[in-house]
Length: 267
Image (cartoon, rainbow, N blue to C red; front, side, top):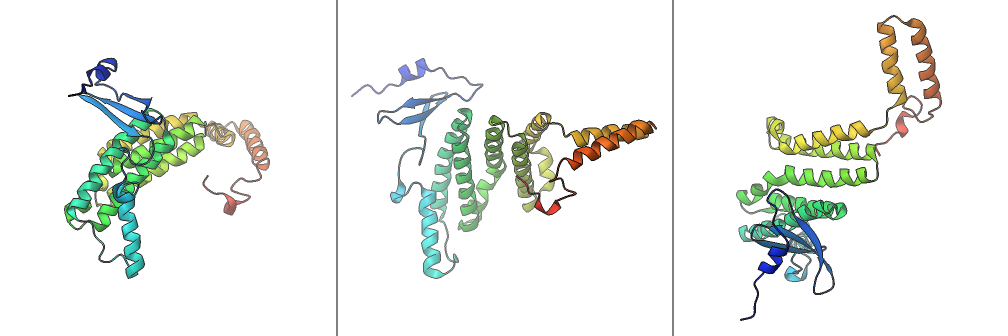
C-alpha cells in the first residue's frame, strides 16, 4: 500500500484554534488552490467553479443544474407550477452549499472580496430555490436560519472592497443596504424583536460606526452646528457671519438639493 499519510503536511502547517488559517498553493495541475487548515486535516478548494472541481450532471454545480431544470420546466409549461425539489435534492444542495461556505470563509480571510461576493450570492440563491420549491416544509425553512450570516458576509465583502479604495460613502451605502436586508428578513418571518439580539446586525453596526468616523466632514454641516451654538449663546454677530459663510458654500455647490432635488441619486 502506497504511503498516503498526511502528517508531514499537517506538521509543517500548525493548526491555530483561535484563527481561520488559510493559504494559497499551486496544485499538481498548475492551478492555484485554496487550503483551509482544520484540527484534524486540511480542506482544499478550487478558486472558481465548484470547490471540489466536480461537474454534477455536466453543470458547474447542482444549483446550476436545478436552475436549468427550472427554466426548462417554465419553457415547457409556461409556469413554474409543478416544479419541486425532493428531500434528497434539497439535502444535496445543502451539502454543496457547505462547500461554498468553507470556500468563501477562506476567501474572505485572503481578501478575495469579488469571489466572496460571488459565493455568498450563490448560496443565497440556494436558500431562495429551496424555500420556494422544496417539497417538504422542513426543506423550505431549514436553511433560512443562515440567511442573516450570509447577508452579513456578502455585505462585508462589498464594504471592505470599497474601504480598500477609500470610497467611504460607497462603503456606508453598502453597509446600510446590508442592515436593511437583514432587518427585512426578520420582519418577513414576523420576528422583528429577534433583530435586537442578532450578532450579524451588531457586527454591521460596528462597521458602520467605523466608516462614519472616516467620512470627510461636510463644511456646511459643521458651520450649521456652529451657527446653532452661536444663536443659543446669543452671539448674533457671529451667527450672521456664519450664515454668510454657509450661503457662500451652498452657492458654490450647484448640485445641492435646493437646486436640483430630482437629479440626486444614491451612488
